[in-house]
Image (tube, rainbow, N blue to C red):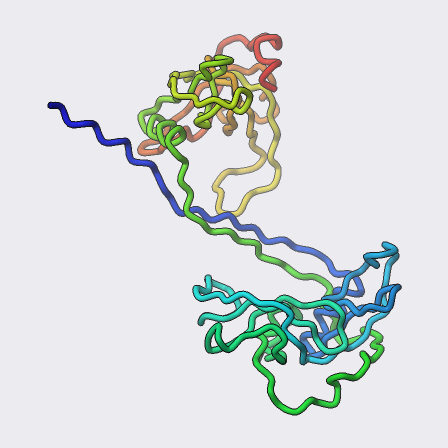
Length: 324
């Protein structure tokens, strides 16, 4: 009796996607963040009399620009919450905490932040909390280190109507850099695992739809047009045709490629879907639609480093126009 072959190992790898987003601040957001630096919480009054914290720049009812700033209290009430027992890197607290929506006294909307509490049993909707300010403040939402339970006597600002504020501070914050980051474990699945393993052997493998017979590279495991599984593997290329391209003039961080350079969509011979790759071995201003190219591999790489011209005549437009 022959033992059944074990299924191929499905690849997994940690991935990080991150980029800094730089934005300038208008008068409302500038006043709000500068106020946090000075331990002052500002909201904005809308046309229907509501006070929104955090403030917005345009009225959600009339869409008119609003700048009627008011100061609210640093205390408030939890309107809803969720316990976070496994804080991730760069979250407000390193120990388990609650994410809470807090309606500050004087506000009509809730602010999302962290609540420092010993456990989920210590958190409830309706509980009173107050801001714990960060020791060093720079004019960011992180100037609120977190919220903490507040069982003391009401302060003079609690329950009082929000006081008008002109939003004027010395050395106002005029811009911020928000660092967006997503880190996760990616598994490409059966189809793309086979595709990646083939690339390690300097081969490009796609999958053919049994219904429409299109060959997808990279394979997706199913045909997006017919909705059926694609299990028939087909080796394509290695050469292909540039269907369209762009010239990159801004140098990417941690990418050791001199600008300008060209990224292109390349339809490999035998494929019905174009993949993208960098074009080199030719001046950037000589790259063109229809250019015939081939992959260039580096030692130990799992994918082509770039594509270069093959020296063949350009492909006719009719041969690749459906793949643009």
